[in-house]
Image (cartoon, rainbow, N blue to C red):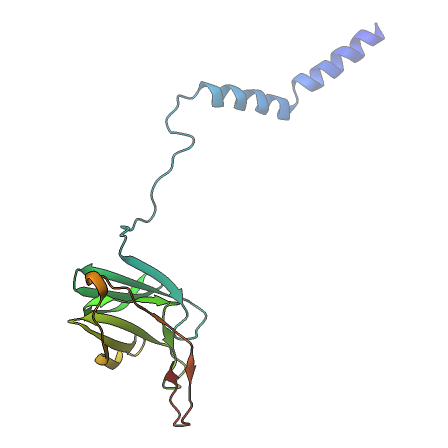
Amino acid sequence: MKFDNKFRNTLLKVVTNPFLLSFIFTFVVIFSLPPIFNKYDATIVHGDRDARNKQIYFSDLDGDGTSERISIEQVYPNLIGIIVSKNDRILDQWNFTGKLLAMRPPLWGDIDGDGLNEIFVFVYNEKKIYLNCFNPVTNMVFYKDKFVVAYKPVDERLDCGVLSLGFYDNNYDGKNEFY
């Protein structure tokens, strides 16, 4: 008889345990709820259109530890748009007439020694290649459509590009030259 009382007391302790009662109650509530939401639902948080003629680069142009987003796009057949943004805020947009020349790697560097990188864009327009250089942080334009060389493409295709060797001050005037 003593065994029966001991068993009954143990069983009563287990059945009236608050953890077991809350587990049973939670189990009943969870599985009796109707499916009001999809368990695995993916939503678009940020969207951006993708274009084949758009190039996106990231570089810390002002040296503050945060990279700026540089978007270069051939907007129309004869117009190039460059948008520089930082922390999802557009700093400015620059437009150049012509077709963008292939640049590997993208060209930016500090030519005036102020610690801020300038962006270089080479364009082809009317059988000539032009250089455009600007500082997106200070909004200063160094070169706008500066003539580089006359060029006639074969079969009306642009089959040339620009390769950067670096920025060096070879004449010791305090300004880096682009090679």
